[in-house]
Length: 102
Image (spheres, rainbow, N blue to C red):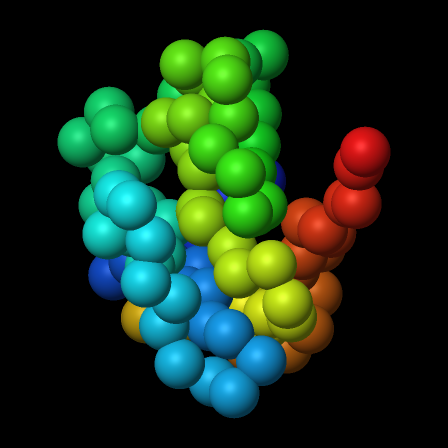
């Protein structure tokens, strides 16, 4: 997991609805963050952290652990970095991409 955001504090990926508000959901999860990863609350396979941003809860238990519930009608998410190292501030960090799957 050497490609995680280089920070001194923590990173976070919060999810908002189309109007910029957190999305009420069955597991009361509004973000995925490095604290969750360090606590072992997220599943890492093949040295990769995959976050599932979708409306429906995944049926696979490991995928469900990495689920960030999304609304059915529009969303936005961002990446927040607290205590960023130089690669984040100078743009040389290769930010992971969101990949739409079906």
